View 1 (cartoon, protein in one colour):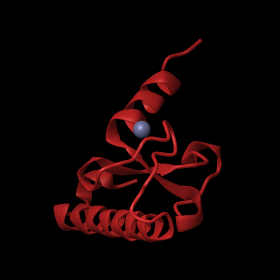
View 2 (cartoon, helix red, strand yellow):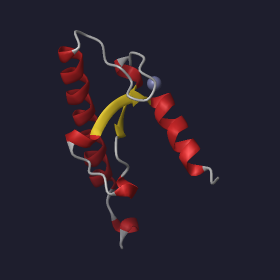
View 3 (tube, helix red, strand yellow):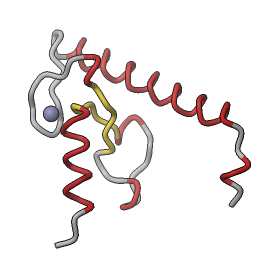
Length: 89
Ligand SMILES: [Zn+2]
């Protein structure tokens, strides 16, 4: 593990690749559903600026970052889901 040695540039590239994937999925769903992009967590339409990518099957449970395992959700819903998941029962 040498995470501290990673140049910032690498992080930036990773982020921009994810946001490209997000835009691609967003546009694909919008085209299929005639402009509506439902949040996969609450079902409400997601505005482009609110859209985040959600792993349908979490990485921690063996999910992949392939497009098949990604869905659009509100940033808010995404955060709530993770906040809930982080609270031990
Ligand atoms: Zn939502």
